[in-house]
Every structure is written in structure tokens, then in C-alpha cells.
Length: 285
Image 1 (cartoon, one colour):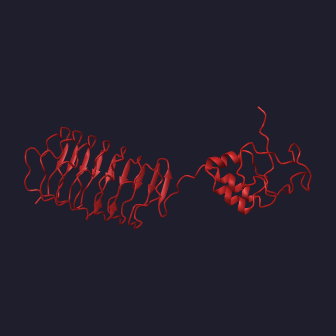
Image 2 (tube, rainbow, N blue to C red):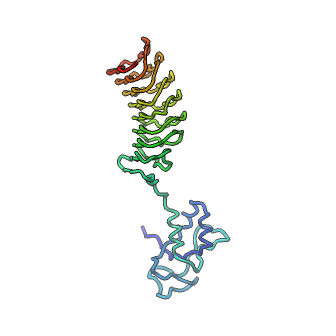
Image 3 (cartoon, rainbow, N blue to C red):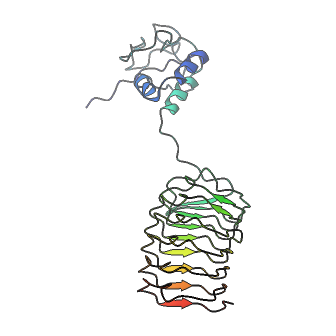
């Protein structure tokens, strides 16, 4: 197969380059198919015909080729003068967008895709998280609120312990279908949870809600968490547990309820916990 023909790049003026910048991205690709960049140190042809002042380049016709693609009537594709950097700029615009960078003050790793932002006094989750992130560590910050759309769908562990969380909006975790571990512990202002807070987390294996000052739990808070194995509810202010609260947790092996204020438990509280191996209830008074 014969190599493609390369034509000398005749640069655009600043005004014409600005017009090109407004063209659709697909249009840029079509126009760039008949443009190539000459080395910045080489002189370019300054007229419609004839060689440059250093003579013809072997194998390259000095006469300007016609572009096979249609061109707007108010834009000249090959103007005679202007800096050569305009052609390079157009080529750069045709490249795919760069991958999102690591958020400021965070540390990122590529394998597995990890973002570590702990202990940076963040008051909110960084907005520039790479969508491919699989492991996200945000512990020991000052984050107050979590909202839907904050986290990408590929997360496996998500650590948010030791923040200032007081509110988790419904649907915040709904699309995190791969999530296996969620640590919300040691958020002393998180006194209540919405009924659907954890809906959709069917692969979740470990849920940390210790030391959050929770005084009650909605009856369906754990509904659908069929893969859950470890549930940490110790050192809260729980006064009562509703019947069938854990009914969907057939795979739960560890349940920690110590250090609460539980006084009375009915016989149906732990119904459905067929795999339970360890239950801690000490320190309730």
C-alpha cells in the first residue's frame, strides 16, 4: 500500500484560526485530513506557486493542493501568511481529550485505580474524581453532606469515616452497584438515616455505621443487602430494634451492637440471620 501524500502546511491567521475553533469536532477531523505540519524551523512557501526560498522539497509538489472536503465560503483553508503554530493547534484539538487528572491535594494510583484524599480538611467531596476510580479514601476530612451523582459506578471500597457527615441524601449510593465496602463510621453528627439510603447495594459485604449517634433505624434500612457479611453498629445511641430489621441479611456473619442503649429485644429482631456467627451486645445500658 502506497504511503499517504503529505502536503506542506500553510498556517492560518489568528482570525481564521478563531473561525476554525468554532467548527464541530468532526469537521476538524475532515479538514485536518488535508493538512500536515511542517517542522517549525523550516521556512514555508509564501505564495500560491513556486518553491520556497530554499528550493523545492523532493517528492512534494510546491503548488497548493485542493482539499477534497467542502470549505466554508468565509474561510480560506490555505492563507498565505501567519504563524505555523496555528496548524499545530488544530491538530492538537483533533486529539482525544486527556484523562481526568488527580484531584488537588490527593494521591492517585493507576493499578487498581485509586484516589486517596484523606486528612486534607475537605468540606465536600472533590468534584474532579476520575470516573474509572475503583478505590476512594476520604476519611478524616470535614465533609458534611453526600448527594447523588457524587461517586462513580466502579467503586469497590469507599471510606468516609471520621468526617462531619450530618446528611446523606436519598439515592447517593444507588448507582454504586459494584460497591463491596462502605465505611461511614465515626461521623458523630449523623443521627439519622433515610429508609432508602443503601438501596441498590446488592454486592455490599461490609457496612460500617459505628459511633454515629444513631438513635433509631428505619425498618427497611437494610433491605436488599443480600451480600452483607459484616455490620458494625456499635457505640451509637440505639434504644430499640424493630422486628425483622435484619430479615434480608441471610449471609450476615458478624453483627456488632455493643455500646448502645438497648434495653429490650423481641424474639423476632434477629429473624433471617441464618449465617450469623458472632453477635456482640455487651455494654448496653
